[in-house]
Amino acid sequence: QVQLVESGGGLVQAGGSLRLSCAASGNIFTINSMGWYRQAPGKQRELVATITSGGSTNYADSVKGRFIISRDNAKKTVYLQMNSLKPEDTAVYYCRVTNMFEYPYWGQGTQVTVSS
Image (tube, rainbow, N blue to C red):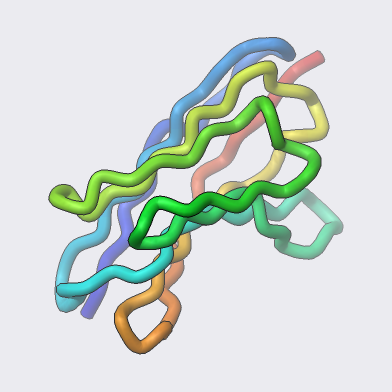
């Protein structure tokens, strides 16, 4: 069994910053890609950012230049530094990791609310 524990969400004013963390534990020895997705009320879940085991990153256009994804392989942890937050960034943010067979695991989600 694999557990993903997310932390760092909360309420912040527009223009502020938050840092999300997601730590993987359990029966996962090799992590391939790690990433963050988000889902706003009434909308589909969407990709925010991903990072491969080699460190290559990919970002949604809406967050480029504002968010930074990083990972610590030794700690099996992925981070999302979110700067210059906007009200439209309000959503539940989900961590997703894949094992060596590309099987995905999802976190339980953490709420991010940006007030105007």
